[in-house]
Image 1 (cartoon, helix red, strand yellow):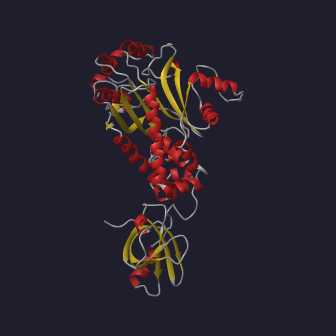
Image 2 (image 1 turned 60 degrees about the vertical axis):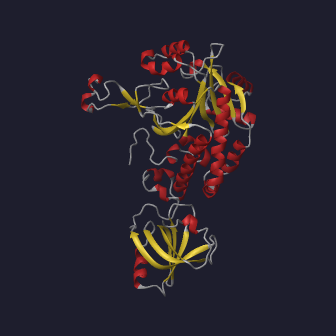
Image 3 (image 1 turned 120 degrees about the horizontal axis):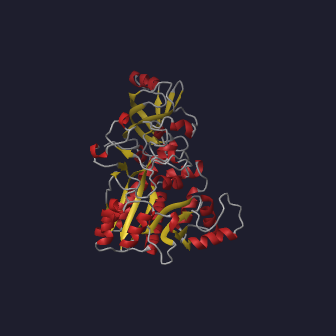
Length: 458
């Protein structure tokens, strides 16, 4: 296996021959010497390749003329101590092979490109510093997610992408059908459709995850979810990935403990394993993002009830855009204020039942449920969860209250009918977590190929 540039840059300069494969980020050419900055995506840094044109053979000289920005190459050279600043080693080229040329109309020239422009060429933007760094951080966080749960006794479960159940009860689901579109105007005869009934893309793996948690203990899902929500904002996607653990024999307080521990673990892992990329984000994207993450890691999360949170907001006398009163769903401005008020992350519990999903455990007061939102500074909500309703009769009633049909959730109700246990879980949108970690302001810039309303490219 070839050595990646990330490892080459750590290798002592002893004059040994080494092979570099990558893409040309920049080229400086003079009469006697040609300097190439080569990057292979393994790290932020380029490696400098020096070609002595006076001693180079005709094959190497011909290759130089074909190596424009964006071209790919295979270079054999000697690894020597660098004479310039910014790197400890460089490569003195002996052989240069052009693998793929890049003509002058290559879109990513050596200049600053706007994120808006780069979204139009999402298939090329991973070659830029910013999006390569996002990809590496995303990869590291994905590994950390599995690592955390595997180290703590959770089983990884794959839940269905195609489903008939609306976990959120909001109805914003994409329909899946084999009926030709020109026959949909008169409605679909679902008995003749592929599944014999209406099917949709899942909005959450939670309900199916609960069935495994109530048999195996602690499980987690980590996969794609879909929302047909017509929101053209910097925080919404039609297709995104969710992390959703479910824990049996777990109440709301234990749920918060795990959520806090999990979040801190992921943030710490990224800071330890993506130092170069995080320094880039700290310098170029959001000043102080590293200190922000360290603040979350080193701060014990405050826990308050929704009712106490509303009282704090009312007593603040702050002129919020959205007026504050008991019963409202907290907006981002309210959530940010609470984190500022307490000087760190806040877990808000016991929300009004009318603004939360049907599956949340009803409190004794009959007005609130054991739901929790975890808020972090400068963002607001980052995790949403709850203790799940484990009483069969209450759950049936709540399903009816939101206009759903209990018979369509018979399989879900069976987990309460046969050996019900207290259990809890939470959901964390992966893309929003990456936004928080990197400081990127648009969710379309932290997922490889964003799917949004009126946008289905690549």
